[in-house]
Amino acid sequence: MKDIREAVEQAQIAQAHGRRTIVFVDEVHRFNKSQQDAFLPHVESGLFTFIGATTENPSFEVNSALLSRAAVYVLQPLGEADLQQIVQRAQAIDAVPAIEPAALDRLVSYADGDARRLLNTLETLAVAATREKREQVTDEWLLKVLGERMRRYDKGGEQFYDTISALHKSMRGSDPDATLYWLVRMLDGGVDPRYIARRMVRMAIEDVGLADPRAIRMALDASEVYERLGSPEGELARRSASCIWQ
Image (spheres, rainbow, N blue to C red):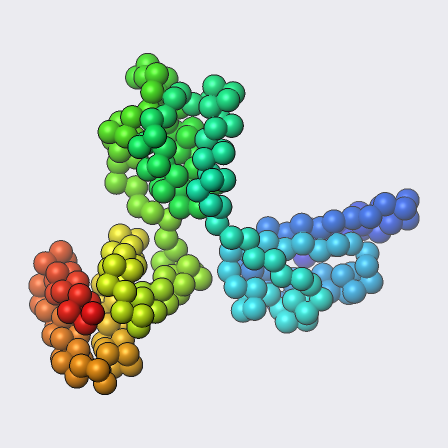
């Protein structure tokens, strides 16, 4: 609240001198209701332009009164062409060595639409290449440097629910490749396999059971097998069940 009051005072001084103020709040969802409400009268009076950034769904994390006075813009992940352009700019200033095409494709895929993730990886590659006196980043060496880092995945936030929704909709759409992709991505991201087992039972009941009543029995069997065997053996039961449903 002290920082908010200071921002208001600075905005009032700027306004007295004919200048406008922008107040930018990063991670605005971390502000509690009282803190968010403190901005409201000044947004209404036009004292400053308020911009809040959040990785969460603003409909749930931002007060409705403040949200109703704002325009919401959703920032989408960058496309492959955008990420490749970032790599090209880094190479143009000799920040990173040459990268072979296969390694570039893997690097862009690894970034998963996140420019900051890509830049951090490029910095890691540049330091490692300098240390090893490498003139080119090969696909084999890239895999060695990246090691076992996992794809970007938020186990507790909005991305978690987007991913489980994608799994459910892929199953509902009878797309086995997409179903297995989202299933493995969630496992790779560290989700509790028992949660996936419960969702598979739900999918069997909601989307498959009428067409094939055996699906419910298979989902329950897969869940029970995992409880008995644990990981990684139990994961084979869930994958088999998801394939058979198709």
